[in-house]
Length: 185
Image (cartoon, rainbow, N blue to C red; front, side, top):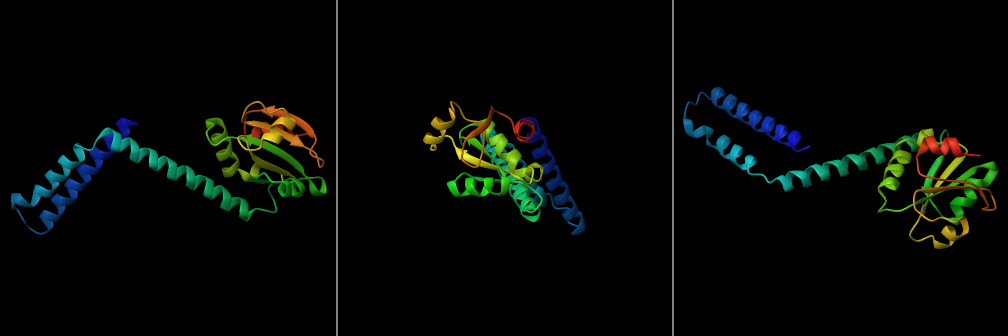
C-alpha cells in the first residue's frame, strides 16, 4: 500500500511539474524563478510523513465503504418490492417480518466485530439478493441480552431464523448472503 502511495505522489509531482513547464512555455517565460514553486512543491510532498499518508488512505477507504453501503441502500429502495429487507431489530420489525408467512432472521452483530462489519457491508450492498419474503434483523449483540439468553447466543456473528411466535427454527454461525440462502428453512 505504501508503494502505491509513493507511486501516486510521484505521479502527482510529475503532473504538477509538467503543468508548470507547460504554463511557462505558454507564457513564453524563460525565467528560472518561475519554476521555484514547482521545486518547493516537490520538496513539500516528499516530506509528507508516512503516518499522514496512511491516515489519508484510511479515510479514503472509510469513505468508499460508506459509499458502497449508500449505493446498496439506494438500489434496495428502488427495488423494494422485489427484494427482502435488512433492518434493525425491534419487536415491530419482527412482527412485520413474519406477517403473511414472511421469514425473519436475527443477525446478532457487534460494531467491534470485523466479521460482523463485513457481513453488514455484504447485506447492505446486496439487498437484491435477499429473497423477497425474508427479513434480516440486525440485532445488537451487546445490548439484546434477553434475546441472547433465549436463543443461546454465545458469540457475535450468529444468525437465528425465528417463526411468527419468536421460536427458533434454525441457527448458524458466520457468513453472509450465501449462508443465509443455504440455511433458510
